[in-house]
Length: 65
Length: 385
View 1 (tube, rainbow over the protein chains, first blue to last red):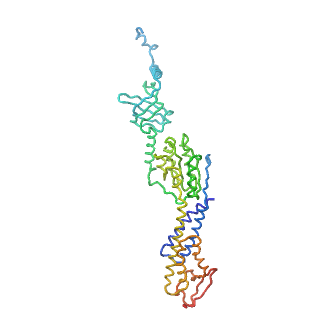
View 2 (view 1 turned 45 degrees about the vertical axis):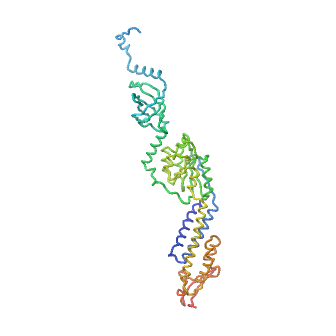
């Protein structure tokens, strides 16, 4: 269905946010470890979405509907 | 010939009525002078709500009144402007009710560059500008990772084929919704307005490409019409117009959020390139790794000279693995905190889950939790060894 494309932007945006936090100064170790794990997961999912994607084409009928 | 008895003729039976004279004049003119091409300057132009046009054609020494009926003028893109030089195919006649000689114009052409078509375009452009539809501030940005792209074009044309080809190469994550329409000919304007309204009724569209492949100026003309441009301006998602003409930009190009010279170029603007995105993801992975590494290093350094076994071991592990951190895939996996535990390291934490890394955090008698590879155990500190 259309789940895959919509998730891609969300995965990347969250990954970027995680990277910004990991690069910031204030973070404690616990949070860094947790975020890193989440980041790895998001990254893998984004890469998987991209690798398995195929363009889908739908055409609206010529009658008014 | 002979003498005309004027007094005899001046009787009710002999005299002509006004209407008869007028009618006779009309017959004489129409039969004597057929359709003519007349050139002159337009003046005093007035269009009535009936759709009929009244104006004068003049040159330096004479002027003739003209009428162009609606059934003849509706084919024209716009009305002529006063002062315009035109060619008219006209039938000289007499307007019986007024006894006026005038021309009934059947065809009207302007000698100005681009003719009436150009004038129509300029008038439409002025109207759109006045309504703020050409304002650059109106242009909307394109979404970064579009998921659903609408394409309004002819379903059999090269434009759709080109767009799909580019999307397949660059961004296979796309769902394409094709809104078919006619892009040239008499039906094009209505079909385009209808198609754009259908586009607006769709849900979940991120960006719309509207256009057609290359063609002659006349073929592209539908995209220069005011109603089509206005319908495009109404579209609630960002639009990219691609009308495929080398030099001119159509009215739709000016109104759309973005304009591209060809449908392929439009598709390339609409979506990112998966190769660039793959590289961006790799870079993000590296930054995450470096960020974590730096955090761990700072943490290990903070342990000072207390000789804490865990901290020292982790610091050595990190230094040794610095190169690996820069890679993705399996190596990132190896550095995942859980994998670190697999190699026999343990993490001490207090009840709240905070990592304990200094001997000062673990005075004798302090209760804490130790996480090892396969679980957690409770512990009590014996104090510094």
